[in-house]
Length: 543
Image (spheres, rainbow, N blue to C red):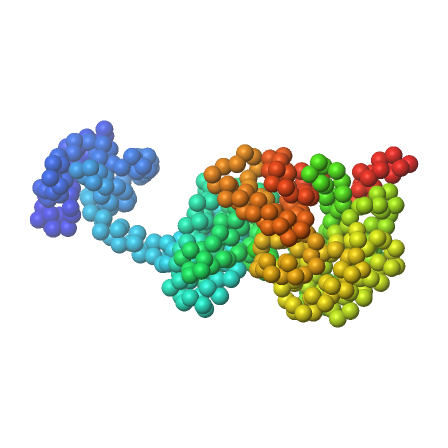
């Protein structure tokens, strides 16, 4: 066995009996086994195998009558070593001859090359290739659903352009650290390139993944002190679920990408779940919207609003659409199409008139009932917006002081002189205004004090950041921020509405902090006008 030829080619030659006891070790093998100080010659081959490789070795040995070749690990002097083992059966002696090649160096180099090929150089995250192979492995296993979330940072290009690529890289690395902390068992975070990331949620359907992504929105929203002046970013997210939204890697990623662009178009910094309608939302949907209005497919639901003693005081009107062919289409899907098609003035005017007609019915039973109606930037930018609003007020006969038009901070800050004139004319007629999603834009205290705004609406992201139960150290800063918003608003005589209230602890905190109005799933989900009427006057409404 210890011939000169074998000595030059092999690192070790062993002869092993049926119990795996080592009966013979070649001279080069003896030197190879004892090369590490303190190491001894092995007496049983299985005893030196890596525990994770024992089962595979025995299975291969039992299933191969004559010869086989296998890569596995042994422990040599306490050090893990990769070998290639070639086995030959000696039938007469009931033994095996093992020819051993040390391939540790090759394995290390191969592992390094494989890691480089499958991971992003900047962040160390899995790259597109590894993500694809991981998803395809899960597809082969079948069974449990999983979700793919495509993340695109909002505002990252501005950081890159303003502070340079080195600062942009620092922001990407910091984003990676924040997102890794949110991974659960079996989840995966990958970087596709640029400022695009993918979160692979194991054993989570779209609903569960959407809940988990609330924390992602909050994590990215925190200031980045890596950049000068504390850069602030958001993240637009698209979500696709297996198998509901695709049964292969390309389809799932494409659909998540489609949903992500809807998040961008709907105002950014939000999560959009892919729907089958999105794949076909093309020019034909414009006709469907026109026909839908004529056929009565559009309607309004109402999110009830309560004071802090849980008395119903008003509602926010929410546009809904159920198409006979497409089914129910969410506002995050159809509003961007409506705006892009130039139909928002038409549809927005319809929604305002519809809501005001309903407000008139509410006011007959509750004269102080307040209706809040969202106004898009396209509507507000119209030269005759104030005239159109007052025409609807006169037509419906409502008390104008009970109509609140909700506008976003970005709308408020654009076209400042034009905005101020329109707000002033409507405010003279009694119409009130509220800043929607307060805290997510770039509002200025100067504008708040100059413009005729009556209230602010704290975005639900801040309410969710408080947590669902007793305060924790992590949520204390969020609660301080909410208290500061409320105190700021009250100091300039603005009321405060909190949206997204889902727990008793959140409501109790808001009440103690001085918040005026709350809306959310805790107090009441969006409902029909008849359900609102039942809450206003149960007996009369049901009669």
